[in-house]
Length: 232
Image (tube, rainbow, N blue to C red):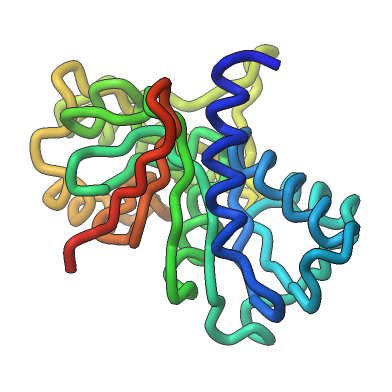
């Protein structure tokens, strides 16, 4: 196991300590969230947790949860989730996030807003002085006029391109949409203004700026675990 994987596991283990019997959970997508799902499944199989139901943020996470026998529930049936646990691609000092490099940003955002507590788990390498410095911003866009939408994204002070796989094919999300990635050379100067511009643009379905959403972040590093709580 690599040192980075061990840090992710430590963060996931700390998040699991917040799960109690009878909870309705949101399960994130990505490598750190996958570790959390595995640990949750192990606890359920051992009988240490009971009466858990979960909403997954991607088909991949849903399949992983099903393999462990974690009961699935729809958001409509769940109503309010007690806790959503997910990773992040970048985290700033205000606990704002860039998410979505696991191709699931739209579902991740929908699940997060239905949770009483949105808990982010990550290794310390995800901290950043400014969003966009370390990570591109993923943007989910419609297949119709996708190239025109990418052209517009390039007017926002970034380098944007359609996200393609190793074979050169555009990534298709679980929702049937495409993804663009936007690189900001000096980071995103005003994430709130950018979020408003993206939200207002037809053809943009959702973006990976998760602003004022995380209630807490668990960071794992060489000095151990750090719990950062949002000041409301």
